[in-house]
Image (cartoon, rainbow, N blue to C red):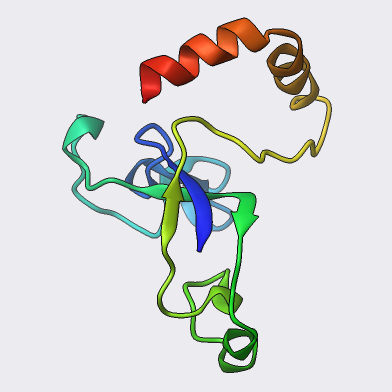
Length: 118
């Protein structure tokens, strides 16, 4: 079991990478190579991201290492807790601080957002 959130804007089909070799060095291209993908993200299959919040796993899963990569310790059968908003986000640098500061200082607005998403 793990908590996650749906994100169409961050869908893997929309990912890019910076080329490091050859004539396209330093330029962006499709992550993982050329593909046919629509710009209409609403037609993509839903993609969910682990938010590093709530999680629980069986001890045996750690030994088996057969869960979804990179969270192999979760096991093959992972039950989602789909949250309506990005939660459990780490503060990894200065970019993250204002988001968390706003979230902590605006509980009424956060409550309204949560009601809209439910």
